[in-house]
Length: 368
Ligand SMILES: *Cc1c(COP(=O)(O)O)cnc(C)c1O
Figure 1 (cartoon, rainbow, N blue to C red):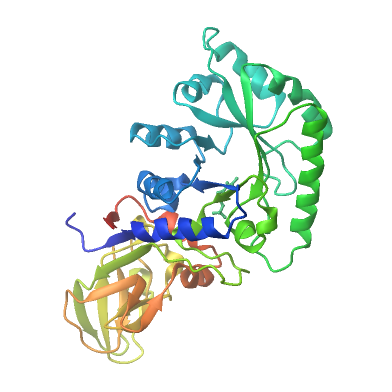
Figure 2 (cartoon, helix red, strand yellow):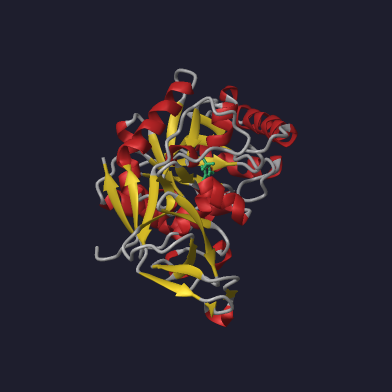
C-alpha cells in the first residue's frame, strides 16, 4: 500500500481478451481459462471472475492448493487440476468438486484406500496423454490398457482426455502435426476401450489462436487471456495487455565521468551522467538478468545500469529529473511502450515468466 512500485491489472482487458478469443472459436467449443500461478501473476481469483463473466466454461490450475484457494474465495466454476494430485489427497478433490488429472493405473491403486467408501460422489478425471512434450501423461498402449479398467468404474467420470503441445507457438508446424496425429491415435484407444470422454482437448493459447481447427471439444487459454501473444501468431485477434508496472524515481544524482555505482562497481560512468534510483529489485522478481533492459521516464527509454539490487536498481537518465518522476517498467508513457514480449525477448524467455516472477511484494491494484 505504501510502496511506489505497483502492478496495475486492468480486469476489463482480461474480460475483453476472453470474449474475443471466444468469438474466434468454432461454435460449441468450450473455453477453459487457465488461472494457475495466481492467474499468471495477475491474481488468480480476480482473473477467474473475469473469465467467468466473459463466458469461460471452466477453469484450470496447476496444483491442488491453487484450486482450494479459488474455492475458498467463492469461485464456483468447474476446476481442473493440471498436475496429478497425491492419491492420498483425493478427498479434497471430491469435497471441493475439483477435477483431477490422471496418468496411470498406479495412481488409482494408491488412491483407493484414501477414498471414503461412503463417498458416492463420482471422481471426475481428465486423462493426460503425452504425445511429445515429455512432461506428464501416459505414452503407451500398455499404460492405457492398464488404466482403462479403473476409468470404467461407476465411481469415476471421465470428463476429459487431453494432451499438450510442445511447439504450438513456433513457426514450423511439423512437430505439432505429429503430436496431433499421435493424440488422435490415443483418442481411438479410448473409444476402442469403450471409454468416451466428455471433452477431448489439446490446444493451449497458441494452438487455439493459430489453428482453430484443432480446438476439438475445448481449448485451454492461459497466456492469451492476459494479453500475451504466441510467438508465431498472425495477429488477427486483438489482445489487450492486462498488466502495467509502474514505479518512480526515489533519488536522482549526478555521477561524474569515471565514478562507479552498484555492487561490485558494476557500472562506471562514461561521462558526467544523471542517475536515477528506482525502488524495485530482484526480490520483487526483477531479475538481475534484466540489467541493460530499458524503462520509460518522461516518455523516453532509459537503460538499467549496474547490477540490479534486491530492492532497488539504477537507470541512466538523459537529463536531470525530479525525484517522484514516474517510471513505467511495463506499459506505455507518452508515445513509447514497453511490453512483456520485449522484455521476454531481452531475457530469451516468455512473457509469462516475467509476470509470474513478480513477487507478492509488488502489490496488484485492480482497475475495472
Ligand atoms: C499452462 C497450461 C496451459 C495454458 O497454456 P497457454 O499457452 O498459457 O495458453 C494449457 N494446458 C496446460 C496443460 C498447461 O499446463
